[in-house]
Image 1 (tube, one colour):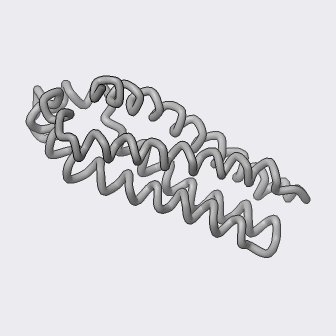
Image 2 (spheres, rainbow, N blue to C red):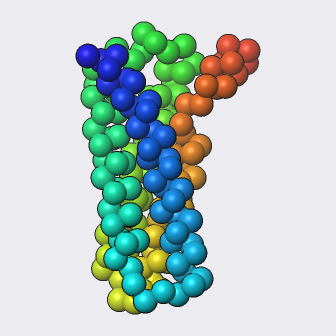
Length: 145
């Protein structure tokens, strides 16, 4: 069952990353085009936030179970515990703020701006903290990841 959660967590990262990229790009375009409607962008932000929260729950199940450690190299264990987990939680908090603050903003321009700022920072954090496959090679060669 834990292996299934690991695979789900691995596949869902691509969904979250794709949703973050699309949400950020559409919000940036909307910020400059100044459209009158925000409804479709609000739904996109909601789907992004939901996917991020599902990913968090699955990740916390894996973290608290501890079986992920037997699949990781020694340097990757430090990465997961000290870097990946706190930064991903911070990214999810920022994504939640991006959705909530954009929903509460007064003008449509401010709504797009909130999404650009918060989902943009969340995108950078998620992109930087995903354990990409090439990181295993760095860990084996340099021993610092």
